Length: 316
Image 1: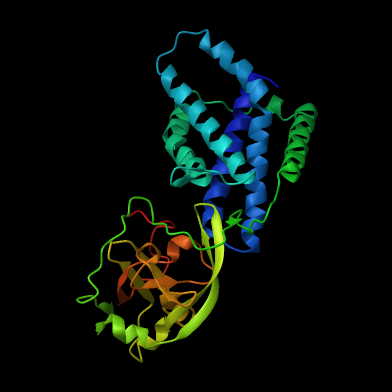
Image 2: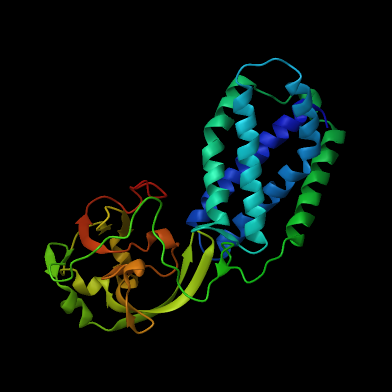
């Protein structure tokens, strides 16, 4: 495969891998499985193109170029993302308090500016002559080989999102959030203008068994107990969405009609929440990814904005 075609193919595969990975972070259930198969196939195809890309890279290294370091950073970042993506598939090893998925996603996001630079600085475009039967067969062979590679990756006990099963829910927080200290004597949960103390919330015993599927690469099914959110809302509300906010400033917005399916949990598996799990109150959102399960909830505000008026993933 010629160098220009190799570069075009790699650019397309990187775009597919990034887009499918981004979508898979948001989805849960069977739709995520289909997206993840596409994501995995793109990753395998990139690896299969490495021998051809190495030839292109060797030729490029012989030429004097400014910004060569940017190309090397791009290559290293893609390599790190691929390596940790496959490590996750083979068993989700942790590196300190970070998971293989954290490195996989972090490296992919980190190289994104370098991909944009590479496309602008060294554009590679298809030509009419490239759309030949021979090249079509090469592309089909690459896709077939990548599909076989995906089939060879061990599935283990993974959710449709690709997460591995954990025996218990693991205390985590989003990105740079730190675990706060809460003075339970002064704690109040504000719900649509009404203050609820911790003892008030403990009086409720609504429960649900739900799967917490964390974007860090693990999932766990646990029994949560607390109060359904709709029971704390004033009757006759005309809001479009509910903004659930943490003590840390982290927040996620939900459609107001989902209030009957959202639990404000004070207990986990029959015991009070500990600080790492969101004590004194955390949100349980069955069927949604872990980053929507807001911890250390301090307020829930009725808003006129639609639920989707927020970044697909938190920026806090």
